[in-house]
Image 1 (cartoon, rainbow, N blue to C red):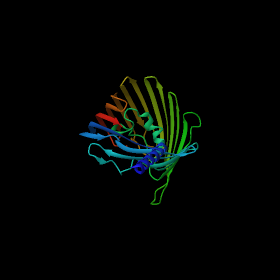
Image 2 (tube, helix red, strand yellow):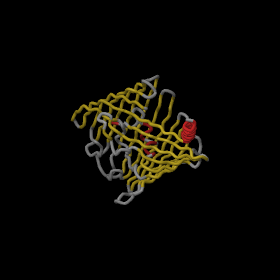
Image 3 (cartoon, one colour):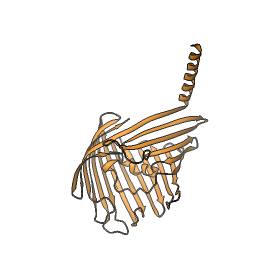
Image 4 (cartoon, rainbow, N blue to C red):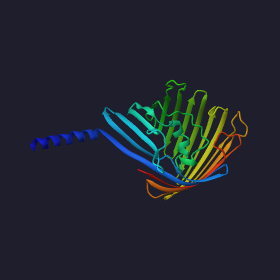
Length: 310
């Protein structure tokens, strides 16, 4: 009995020491909307997934200011219980961080996108049918190596990434993001390149107390193989208590090689926060596309949803 007690006590001490050096967090989001959609006059009623996910992330303290970390994130459809893509398709990375910054390897979304389009689309965080339909995403998420600097000054960081070609005729993809978060002002610059296709976007957001105003300008070249294009987007949010009122408007010019190829997107949204983790919300979004556009043509949706984070 004495030996058993000693072994158990030692195991507890070792386990406690290990737990003090590392941590693993389970997190996720379930986000569903009921929608009435109209695509070129064809009307449907659907339940739509808005980037629901389940994730695991953790860090280990290696000493001397060095840490190892990982993220595994799975996208799924709560309405059917099926995977939204490959099992860890949303994110799967290992990283090392310290005073030198952060080195990341694996599969993850372009930070150029997070710094610009995703940041200013506040009402549903760039998910579902109301996400930015006009933004040109050129980055490739897989086979990536990225480096993020430490803060040069408070709130200022740079991250650059490259996706290996790995044969098969694929070209290397590059993306760079610059972020500044200083009190009420947030500024982001994002650049992506894949062969002859490239894009650069600049966004800014300012918080005037309850009123938040944001905007973005993006210029892309051969993103869809039909010349150059510019698109702009503005967003306004008014937050009072648990209530959020949102307006987003985006306008894309014609492609330089194609006439009548522009588009306009308008979104009105309302969120009510039941808690810090749960909200109910609704929105109306509409894309007006010209006849030669490369987008998903004329489209609109009226949606009611629930989002819960854990």
